[in-house]
Each structure stands twice: as structure tokens, then as C-alpha cells.
Length: 226
Image (cartoon, rainbow, N blue to C red):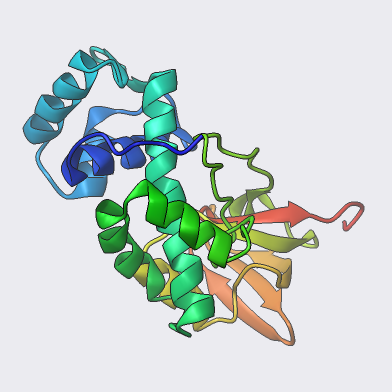
């Protein structure tokens, strides 16, 4: 079943943002939505109330916002379009993976469902985007998310990078410059005192990552590495 488009790009961005933030914490604080979108909390609250009127979200005062089942399907439809475009821009047009996120964000709001599914057929239905994140199905279902944040690993522990989430061009460029991308094997070699940054080995090189950055790198942890 192909999803139909529902309303404007602003509402789509809200639902997608709430879905992304829900992986980190649920309910999602309205302030977190506002910060991610770069708007005021008042503006975010107004849109969330409109989304609640349309049964896409539920808002709990002083706690945060949840996506309803329908809201989650809508959000996953937006995410599907975005990640398919990321695949096309990288694999079809050769645009570096650190640049495709912002381009895809613009294209996702102007893509008809027929084009979306034609794009999926053309790409032979990829399972993940260039950043390693799963692509939702045409029915709006998100595949199970795997892995743990790199920041959770201790010295001596190893893993394989699965995905970068959530994605921003600045973050991906920072990681790309250090050879950190999905599929790469890594090992944590040191953690600075007082909950400081991690030193990780990628290939034959050691790189230092701040904990905020490492929290966005999801890895499949290797067993018995310590």
C-alpha cells in the first residue's frame, strides 16, 4: 500500500523530528523539538496542538509529545522519501554521503508517492540509506533498529559501525574526515578521565571523539573483546 501525502512540509518536518527524537527519549520534550528545528518553544507548541487536533500526536503537559500510530506512519513515510533520495543522490549521482542529507530534506517534501515507489524500484529497494539508517516500508513501518551508541563502549571493546543517527551535514562531515562510516571496524582504546572524550582506532589511525558525537554513532558490538 502506497501512502498518500497529507499536508504541508512544515507539519511533515515536525512529525519526522518527533520520530527521530523519540529514539533518544519518549515522550519527546517540546523544547527538544523546538531546538532541533531552530524555532521558539511557543511556535513548536502551536504546531503540536494542531497535530494533536488531527490525531497525529498526543501531548502530555510538562512531559512531552508522543506520536500516535497514524502519526508514526506519516513520519515514517517522510523518512522513507528522504532516505531513498539519499541513496539516489549518493549511488546514482555520486554526491558524497556527507552532503546528501540536506538535499534529500528538500526533495522529500516535493515527492509524490508514485515517484517515491518508482525511485524505490529503480534503486532495487535498498534496506538502508548511505548513513546506515533503515528505510521504512511503503506501508510506513520502520524496521527494528539495532546497535548501541559508540559512547557506551569501554576501552578494549570493539564493534562495527552500523549507522549515524540522527544525521546532520556537519556531523557526517566531521566523521567522514576521520574515516568513520557504516561498515568500518572500530576499537575504543581510551576514555579521558572525568567522562571525557573517547579515543578510537579506525584502521591504523587513532581519532578522538567527543561524547556527544560518539552518542550519534551506532555500532554492532563485538562479543568477548575485553
